[in-house]
Length: 160
Image (cartoon, rainbow, N blue to C red; front, side):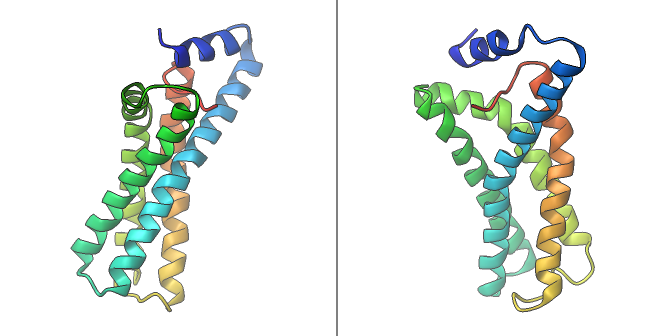
């Protein structure tokens, strides 16, 4: 059991029933918001860059997905590195704990962007573009929250 996992188990092992569930919901919410910050910045940034540079829809989506994963992963590393994990330990923990959450969030965001009428054909000055980005972020949060709840409940992830 690593330092991170020991903190989780020591800090929450004594909770019972609804108090423990409430703690899991809070931690899952925190983890999902943390993931949303990295993934969302990458996703919206990639979509905005691709749209501004008139990339094809495919190139824009690839850029958005790559930036979403990179920033999501980077944002996951920061608290672990601050907690004195080695880069290797932090990267492994983020890959395990956040990889699935990032993948689910990115998938939901992309699906909303692709299937919301007008988003992929719009420009940065079109309201539907920004409505699509907001809807994608909401969908990403909604899709990733259950994943994070399960990971928190199983002791796989915990935000400092």
